Length: 295
Image (cartoon, rainbow, N blue to C red; front, top):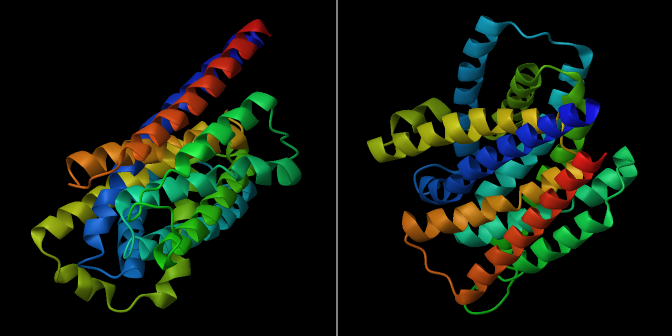
């Protein structure tokens, strides 16, 4: 039955986004520590340059079809992603991993608003309610005991807008192309966009210590190869607004990593915010799957 097929595809897409946000959640702590050894632009460039090699090897083996939609969608989404990753890395120089995660969440939630005029995907009342809960959760930022917007936070929010636009672009093109093909084009575009701003990346790579190389390897494999591919797989079946809301789980995972391996400490408001985000995501996904099953 069509409804069963659609339900299965959406469930698989949601599962893919859950894994992607888990992988990305760990990157906030890793990037925070990595920018001590590499400047933000060089860090982003190196992690995605390594991802090109990995994706290129898989592409040579599987030989996916590269159509016009893969090229156009990949270039557009890669440009948005370049702005997002670079601004996020700059912001992490002067803000905590947890704050960066929550601000990124707050920005990506606007994907539903962008998708309305650009893709004619009008958000449902349930989705708006879930976004509202996640926004409230994202606003509970304990920075020196109160909400503030410094330069690091401003850069992070600007990067989040780039991510939101990337979600909209992929919602337009991902359902029509081979996921591996558009992932490779997106990654190559991102690297080419950053290349003019990078100075002596190979020298910087050679000077890294072993712990820094391990962090870079995680960013390249998990955060720059596997997670972007899973996002594109998810966006073949899940609308942009729900993808943006699922991105809100990223700071929840980041909070866990920041507390455990990142040695950061957060006030009770952070945990309440995480609970609100979880409530928003779970509520929307539960309502959506019930709707599909009734169809």
